[in-house]
Amino acid sequence: MQMEIISFYQKFALCLGQLMINVDLSTKVMNKQTVYSILMDKFNRFNDTKQAQDASLKELVGQIVLTPYNNETYKILDVAWDKDPNYQFTKRDGTQHSLCQYYQEKYHIKIKDPQQPLIVVKASKRMAKRGPKKDEPGMIFLIPELCCITGISDSMRQDFSLMKEMSTYTHVGPNERYQQLNGFLTDIQKREEGRKELNKWQINLDKELVQLTGRTMETEPIIYKDRTIKYNPLEADWSRDGRSLAHLSAKHLDKWIVIYCQRDSQVAHSFVDSLYKVCTPFGMRVDFPEMIELPNDRSETFIHAIENKAHPQLNLVCCILTNNRKDRYDAIKKVLCVDCPIPSQMLLSKTLQRPGQLMSVATKVGIQINAKLGGEIWAVQIPSKTIMVIGIDTYRDSQSRSSQMIGFVASINPTCTRYYSRVIEQRSDKDLITGYKSCMQSALQKYHQVNGMLPAKIIIYRDGVTDFQLLDVIENELPVLNETCMKAQEGYDPKLGMIIVKKRGSARFFARDPRNNRQLINPPPGTIIDHTVTNQEWYDFYLISQMARQGTVAPTHFNVIWDRTGLKVDHMQRLTQKLCHLYYNWPGTIRVPGVCQYAHKLAFLAAQSLHTQPHENLADKLFYL
Image 1 (cartoon, rainbow, N blue to C red):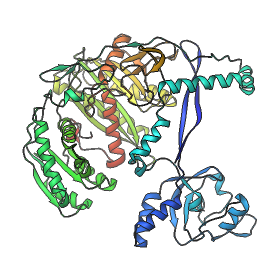
Image 2: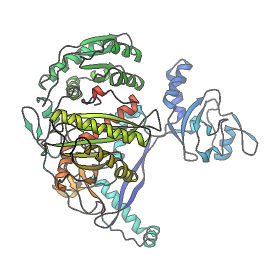
Image 3: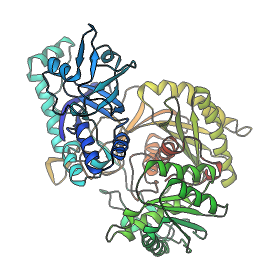
Image 4: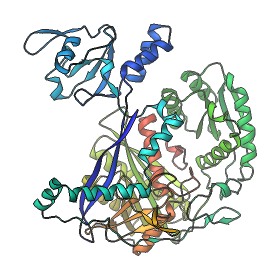
């Protein structure tokens, strides 16, 4: 594998200070592994030809490959086991050529293994008009040894040494990033072609990156049931303190089942014992579950056991899986989220077998289970007691290119620690409007049920929106949400605000190290930048809410596109920072408000595993964590 920096990202923007160019490093993984090497690995691993072919197809179909000889990318559709590089095809001039001849004549490449099968790929319109082709239009044959796999495979992600080495290129620290960006600016101004282009547009570039003054908000006290704690402001992480504190609201596991394969019997019992020990300090009572041992790990075996034992009084179904096969995970989740709506916890047996880590794993799982059952783990001080915050995010359905799932998560109590979650299945604009109306109406009804009144202020954090989609949100989504709110009750007129959340921006900020002014470090969590580099036409700000353990921290950009809340700018920013503390899957701050991350998790589950809306009975629980 080879990793290299291939370019600098550049974008011009009209900011409060003046016209500015946003420049950042762009890295790309260049994978030297060929399709041929993957095929050889499968055939060396399996003695049975059919098993080797099936394993090869499972890994290769759908992958994107790069052909270095023409720098083109293709998507693998199939493997032609009955063909090899001696396959004859007809060129546009009517002559017959083998693939071996074609590559020798056109690219001076000699094929090393003339017995290898061919891969069938989808060609671009341009490539389909020339070169070796398949009988079916839009498809062509390629030789495996000439095709490199792009991206990072699951096996690579599991290779700790490889990922660590890769991170030295992808996670560039503040000092090195600053030096490379300054070097880029210097190169542009020194090179003649750069000066000519700048003069052509009458642009002058500063010799240094923009310097400005940010501000850091105070740390938030984290409120547990019996104690309020303060975390280290440079780390924004309270995992060490939180693992032994009583939760604000603890749910009990008195009726639950654990399903596992025969070989994982000891692992399952050890996990239950550990969960009992770690949950007692949380205030959770964990009764011994019904242990269901299965003869095999087939999907249908798990589903049959669940359907036999499912009943409305069941708190939780815990499944210990032998591996992370997606088809089995999806099948189990669909049953438990749609057909038999029961909160569930999926665990890999190898995770529970890590030496000396079972108690740590059980602690994290115990916190997650309490949240899934509707418990409240911790809170921060929310000044307004009549506010509702909503997170909305989208994810494309993996089974339908024309459909996307929208996660809609709304807080339903004064401390923003309980939530109402729904999914909108969108295939058309009409689905979106109907879905928003239904979700907003139901969320307001749930809020009224919990509090005896409707919220005075509603702030919507809308994630998953590009700059090109911004106008569509303002003209279509915002009016529907606003009108639905006002129709909830006669005379009801809530103060509405809507904020676009953008995580994938390229802006980066550096701070001077107070111990050494020549060194640069990441700004501390809670840093706000709301001038100079913000958009002159928007009410926007950058927030660095979390600590980056590697590389340069990435700020989140918040664009307030509608605000009738009456909140001061500083109060809106502080509220946003507070909400970044309220994601129960991590005892620390995250990049976005908790409701946004919940909406993302919900949309992801629906789009990747369920492919439909979850059952309404689960709406008041964080079942998707």
